[in-house]
Amino acid sequence: MTLLYVTHEDCLVHDPGSGHPERPQRLLAARAGLDDSGIGALVLAAEPVSPGAIAAVHGIEVSRRLALLDAQGGGLIDPDTVMSIGSQRAAQLAAGSALVAMREIDAGHATRAFCAVRPPGHHATPLRSMGFCLLNSIAIAAATLRDRGERVAIVDLDAHHGNGTQDAFYDDPSVLFASVHQWPFYPGTGAIDEIGTGDARGTTINVPLPAGSTGDVYLDAIDRVVGPALARFAPTWVLLSMGYDAHRDDPLTAMGLTSGDYALLVAALLDVIPEAKVIALLEGGYDLDAVRRGVHATLTAFAGSAELPERPSSGSRRRDMVDAVVQMHRGVLG
Figure 1 (cartoon, rainbow, N blue to C red):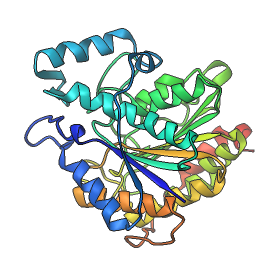
Figure 2: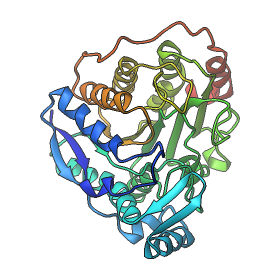
Figure 3: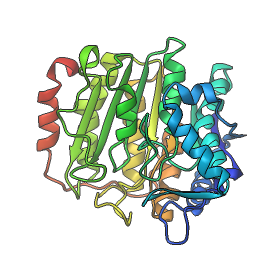
């Protein structure tokens, strides 16, 4: 099985400043994870996303503000979200990376791809860049697939809730969005009763877990919530927001995963949807070694290997939130 690894050196140019956790070295750590895996992935260069693809998700004011700050050589969007020279191009490449992967998968060159790009995207809402994110790359990919008639599922494993992705599809029954995340935590969204609206009720699934949650609880969430929802939805494409900040070594979060858990989680998802085409995009993760091992784990799971870069974690007894989500979505999960 050929795997794709889509990236671009210009994503290193985006520089939020000294001391900012979303630093260029994250991309180098991801590439080290590829090297550690020993997988002979086909490495491709990302291409900038088109204005039309951006407009399928973001209002014109988002693009206008990015262009204005780019022309000024950078600046603050909010206290956490910073642009430098080259940031707009990096965001356009990040958003375009999944479209390159889609093209190659459509051509039969692979069935799974990992996009190692930055800045991350899942906090960027249709109307606002925020939370380190300029453009919502995974939402743009999902909208592109949706608009050509595909059934698309997005699974977000970042420790922070993907509020921007949720907002983009909250009333859209053709896209399933499922997130497993730390709660309560930034950005304050992702409660269990956020389930979609109108005809899309039930196609947004949030599993908010308490700080310290370990891999056994995450696997329980996949087995009893996310997996059954995927099986019922039967997506033709699955997009993974791979944030490695749920790792126990991450400096910004308080979750308890190891890279071994990431391997098991990805493998569990793939077992549910073996025929689907799969693209993962790098989101958060601010301990460089955790990013390196997390990418390694994801790629080995993509390749069907049982290798675990670290021992899985266990011991958390807080499964009550998983029970609550099962009850909330019992009509969807079956």
